[in-house]
Amino acid sequence: METTTVTAPVRRSGRRTLVFAGIAALSVVALVWAIMVTRPDPEPAVAMTSPGLAYTTPLARFASNAAAIAAVGSALFLLLLGAAGRARYAAIADRARVIAVGAGLIWVTASTTTWWLQAASVSESGSTMPFAGLASYALRVSSGRALVVTVLAAAAFTLLALTKPHNWWAEGCLAVALIGLIAVPLTGHASQSTAMWLTSPAICLHLCAVSLWVGGLALTAVLVSAHRSALALVLPRFSTVAGLSLATVAVTGFLLAGPRLLKDATPDPFALVNVMMHSPAGWLVTGKLIGLMLLAATGGYIRQFLMPSVQREETSGLAKLATVEVTLMAVTIALATALARPL
Image 1: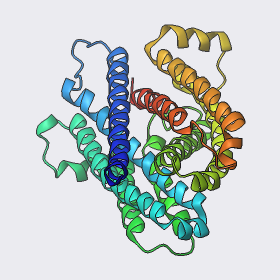
Image 2: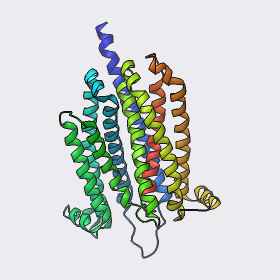
Image 3: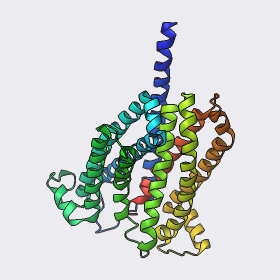
Image 4: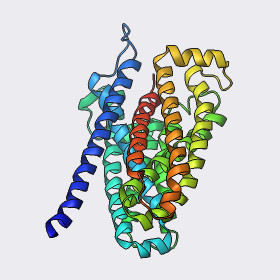
């Protein structure tokens, strides 16, 4: 009996590790494919980014984005759990804090690496650029300054997650994480649009909604999918956040498609559909749209059919459906990471 009791958590941990490894591998494959199909052909007399930097920079950015989403998700989970829930389910709250600290440390590392790689890509020294070039990149280029903000926000989030919980602690963690998440995208293609009044707030809302949705679902699935009473507390609250996030992602994604693909805030619908079907960048947008539709379907199923069982604290198949959703989300984020770079 004792052997069975000890072995069951080990088996669950092993399965969980394999699932996360599979999701990570599939996401990296999707990211590499997206980079390959959207990489411009070399032109005579035009300096091209070295293949190493062309692939490692988006990979580092993807790792930074994933860590940021995990940080946002952990903060949201602790917020949804509430002060009373954190006291009642102290062990679960402690695990969420451990994930938050780990995500913060990875975020600091990945965003610092992204900072160095982007600086190297514009430096005459290339991959041999000294670390002193980081300061020059931050002073002269807006994306460098944004990366500094991201690194500082990631470090602040990590330190805040390590502190003893207090009033507005979870809210503070969430706010700092969201600031770090949106800093870099605001200096990307959104800042180069002729309709910044539209693209800048849209990209902020888009990323905040994605991170709350993806991170919240992942943390809920990992931490409480097997704990019926805690799941009955958290999932209904998260469901409201997920519904609002889905609507926000859909609306802002539509608003951003025209400026991104056609440099036009009010594109002709037929021209937009044509570029989505016949251009590499359009393929990525189409992939994101398909992913969103599948996610909406699985989310609706969870809300309509699984939620009553969860609220009654009965057995549900949430873990399996959540795994499908997180996988779809991870692949979609990989496509978005490739789409966010200059094409």
